Length: 306
Image 1 (cartoon, helix red, strand yellow):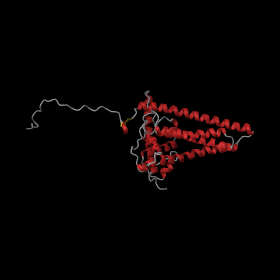
Image 2 (spheres, helix red, strand yellow):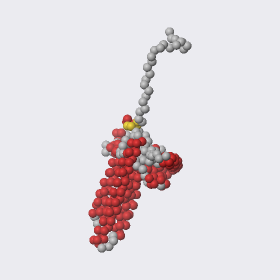
Image 3 (cartoon, one colour):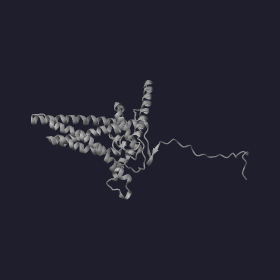
Image 4 (tube, one colour):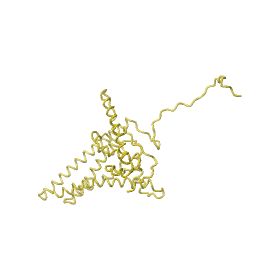
């Protein structure tokens, strides 16, 4: 019935399935990862936006402060020291307060509520917030993402406080103006550390090599790896949050050491490419423009006990 292994096979043409073609790497939902050139082009677009907004906001803030103080001197005849100190105090206070607000909103409004609550218990008003923030935990497809809307939302009260404080004389006006400036400066610092250093949306230059900023960026990297169920939720005080997690500071040191080794290798590669007149990516931390991966199906987020 069947030919033996020694017998020659019939000369019958056999059809084989075509060899699979190299397909672009895709992510969940059928989205395609950007190529290196696309990431660099988007990085240039975002870098231009970052520099324009930073220079524009800073120049407006300096000019508005000068004009406001000049108006007070012209009307009262004396320099408003009390108003200036109140304004400076609110600049620092609002910046620190924004860190705690960002920590609370990040956990309870953007993550924790929708990650831990049953589907039937989720409120309709909160679901769109997660859908916006979810874009930040998925590979980016362009220079911007839906999560950027939160930066605009935080800019609205900052602009309103600055405008009201500029038009309102006296200490109360100075307090409002200072609060608006504090929120604005926090947003600028957040953009450079979070968007620039961590997520590589634009090059940060010498700022990206400052040790204390790299430590802050490493803390947010741990948030995206979900090694501690989402902790840290804040940005600039991430070390304090990780200190409450068993092994949190050790993990932070491991991330920093890995980042230092990677930066050293990239600096060697950049020097070697410069020697031969080649041009490379601007990436120095911690991946070349690729969004830090995160689980698509979000796990339960539970903070350690106080």
